[in-house]
Image 1: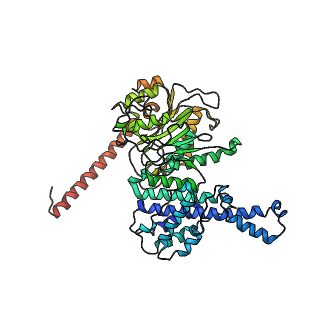
Image 2: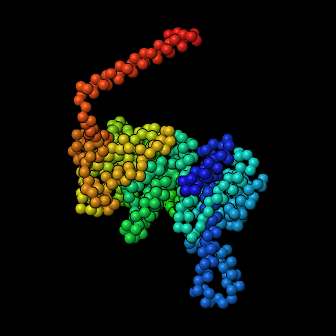
Length: 533
């Protein structure tokens, strides 16, 4: 089966076992077991790497006794340093997936899993407090945990296959997305739909420098940034480098992020603890090259009443009942001199003039910090129908790599509301790969980045417009792309207006007559059951 079919098969089998347990509760043990399978397989693969190293001619020439060589291999295979030097987690014998799955039908499997997770944390200090250890409290029918382990045992890490590690990461992300769809409204706490994450990353194009997400959820922004970097390493004939920094308010979601990073082979600095980014900032001295975030927007309980004199509010004090402009200014304060940020916010942030927000927006525009605004279509998210947009902020608009393009005192507006041609479900859409490429290339051509193709940027009516700060001032500093790009030109079908109106009015008359017949029939049916109108 294909990779997608394999992931879907795993999901259906795993989800069928949860019974009456909610998706919000069930995701933690399932993802923890995916992580356990991954670290166990990585540990086993490292043992083979160690054995292969010892079989190299360089070692053999010094050890003529083959039995001694086997003993050395066995000794090194249980030596912690042989694993830690290659950034492989040390997994105690009793905590390895292959050992635990033999107890799949045992009555005490849940307790064994809890002890296994605790022992892994004890042996690996950087995993302290990360792993799920509540298997014993799950209200699952007897045997279900064992069945789940047998299903996940189908995942295999093969060091000989270059994409084997990716399978675990993709399964982890796929499960996150499926759980988000099941949870609905609450999913926004830990998951941003892949379509939006991909668009943010393709526009910001993180390749070398520090990446920061102050509301990192389960880490989707980091993972997609890594994919972008790896996809372009051949283009630049050099390795990318993206040190990761993040913060998450929810302890359980922070653990999901730490495991997500691990199964993708990433290490990140998520601060010393979880907490509110505004009142308990874990990276106060950070200056990031790229910031990507989908923060909780329109929130009122963000702690603003404690921060009236905060130095981050350089462009104005944000209202205590809405954090949108606090997020924007926090991210500006964490940007390096030539850094750029991409932020998902509610559409209202583009036009609001209440509680000092209009004043802050004007100051940010006048200081030439707003680089690009993107209007998104509805139904992109699993957890909200609130219309959203993307803000792109920059402290240096002269950093183009092609043709010395200088975009100072200009803002690019892109209107994507008519895009999103991929139907994910009855209630959700996504951008196609071609649409994401078109939007991202529009930005890169305008900016003149190294990721732009050979086409020159052009304004396209109804889609994109490069506006001056003077243009924006004339619109009272509203940043809605539709105000600037205008309406797309509609191709003339050649039918005279008079004839078209005759056809339309004739059609309307037919529909009104049909409606009258239906109304009459409805009244008749209601009368028959004693409900006359």
